[in-house]
Image (cartoon, rainbow over all chains, first blue to last red; front, side, top):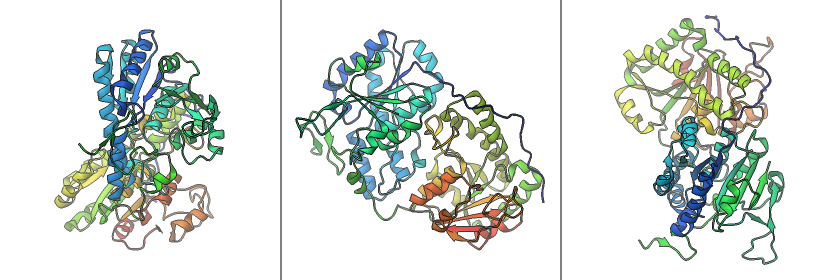
Length: 257
Length: 276
């Protein structure tokens, strides 16, 4: 036998008691297909409400979704049988463009484009009254796992928003989309469908819907989160919803752990 | 610009996924096929254990370095090396646990500990041709191979602050074994060789149990059916391998026995070989 392992045994950890990093921060996603691809008509009123919230002292970190350009590159890359890790890497670029667009619009109000590793600088940016803007795509890239029966990366910008909120110790992740959240059925097809103000991740999963309002991995992770126990899906096309959500009001649909 | 489609307040680009929900299962299945593009099929990834090799110091490291130099002669094998972090990684986790740091914070921290081993290894191998490879500079690989330079890759995956909440407990689920597996998988490498301090995979930890039995060569499916509770490789690697399309062969060999690594790199029987 060769030399012994030189192991470090200086410390026996106590029980795990989680520490919240920046619990007052509101982590907010602006949807790609649902908001940004609509252009000025949808984006400007939402940014006005975010600026107003920031003026009232609410700390906001903004994350951008992808949208139709992401779907376009996913479609072509899938035809070429690219591995999921390559597709996830391609998927980083569009939310980055969108984040940069938002930064240009918010610059005069303190909009600041930040990179994934810049979380460590957030205390300064937020104390200065800035609105940090970043891509919602998690940095997994080539290391994104393949899912059975799909080539599309399972962790996209919804996951990035949830995981950012979870790391920062924020109670709720806010998703600005173009619908009021969840309904008992598709309200465009069934006029009797009613709005669901609150549902648990377990109830949502039990419905076994072929389609869900946020990425499946987020619904899967929610019950085992330490901090981010709620997802709030709101309609950014309705005036006042964004500001209400940022103030902590229960608008839209809340999916809880 | 005829590809742009409007009419619902949004501007789309025409594609098969246009307007579709990427959460919809039938939409997702249309993106799949039987295979994934295999980019570098003739490459072997060699992972050198942190706790099993590097933490033993000089007596374990130098013979392995000699063997790697030997393997490099004639530039016959295309090899990428990864290293583990070992006991310093575990120590980091212990302190971080006590402090209550979030799982993403732990994931952000641990990579630094294996990087130390990567620097040690590169310092020893550089005179014979090696270079640390930047995170995902994979497209430099043909250049490395043509010049006989062995790249030393970063093992821990870049999940960082975004490490998902684990299935159980509070520690990151995506460690170095998974990170290296995923790199080999996405690039379509021919095989992975894990260099550890045991003769292969065992039904239980041979360091704790005198009656532990070494597992024979088997398929991934067979291994998953008898998966030991204590394993020298992370469970996440096997979970990912189950859904993966490219990786066909993983060998686990004893780096304390001279020649085992070379046999595995040449595709000969050594240690425990798991195939898919």
